[in-house]
Image 1: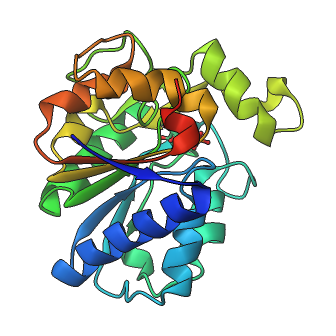
Image 2: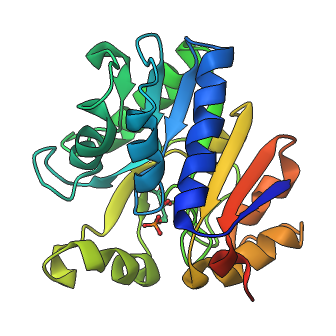
Length: 236
Ligand code: F6R
């Protein structure tokens, strides 16, 4: 695991955008796994400003709340449209995100996993990290060999994400998420961590020991992981 230490969030966002753009330059028809949450917002903004050509890129998002309408301004579909889809030349048919409106979530997850495989797998997966060490919505103590599935959010995650909702009761309690095995199959992984709330779990990543209570530590078993973190996230 390589660690790139940044002075602040702006530098982290710039380095992350350069990393993703390098992937697109190397392979213009690459499959990118993308994340939502507050951490990658700066990276998306920089990618937009860099005017990167996304015309041959395919994107697969990590997760979506369940159930949630696409039009809900807290859906990850809405988030991605606002920060990336509407601002770059991605083709609509090359955009994949789990469907939070489905009546058949298990089938949706199976189909999602199949689409990733049919496209030849993910070339680069971008990840954030939860305060409890989750990646995607793979929460502590969940199986480490899972593919895309429906999952129950922990109280910690519901509380952390309630900052985006009017009140905590509006936070969906379930999500559709790529599994740890889906993420681990990506050829390359970029994890972004910003802020002191992440220091405990980033410290665990640096320890290079797998702990099922901190799901991100499984990344120690992947051979191409880069962590871009700001100083606050490294300050334990
Ligand atoms: C988002 C996702 C989550 C977030 C994590 C950190 O698609 O899968 O794992 O990356 O909750 O969120 P922020 O960046 O808001 O701290």
